[in-house]
Length: 233
Image 1: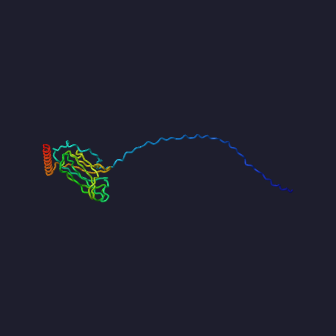
Image 2: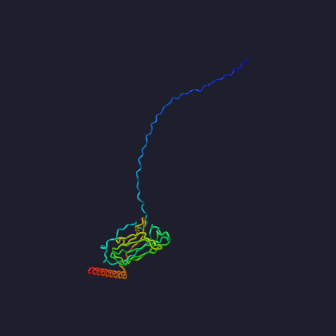
Image 3: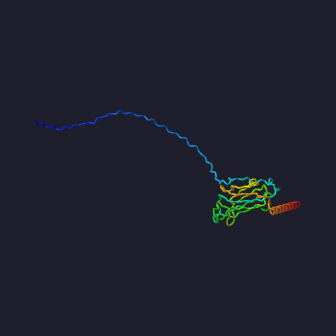
């Protein structure tokens, strides 16, 4: 038997259509968040760190009135050590800074002679933080009299004042004083000093003081006599 060939036939297959159910989702809009403003914080100035062996800087009151000074007390002598300063100002641009310190007894009875000592100027190294390391004798000194420390900067013509500080007598007599003094006129300048009472004044200083007191009384007497003579004529 002979089988005839079947003619080719084309078949078309369509892709199946699948339908999925759709869902709608509702989203709620988030509300606007409100944040409180952070509080204002105020910081004080950082404390100055001082070495453990030093006392913090102190500011001292004005000297006591002359009526409070016991001039009848026996005059004394003091050892004053001027060690170092910190934070001095730059004052001499041409010659450079040459700082030095004076210490004077502030006599409250008008003595003609000044009881005063002075360090040598520092000419080398860090002149903003100069080191002297000098000890001087103040003789005579009466109980109740303050000490005035003055810091100067020496130039070609003269000296410029850096600042001053007055040390009240109750702070160094009779037990002495060792610490940092805050120099007026400079915001962060400090002066390290040591003051030690050494007992009664020397005979020479006491004799000189008595002679000056006698001379002062004679001058006052002469002035009063002249005023009376002018008044009567």
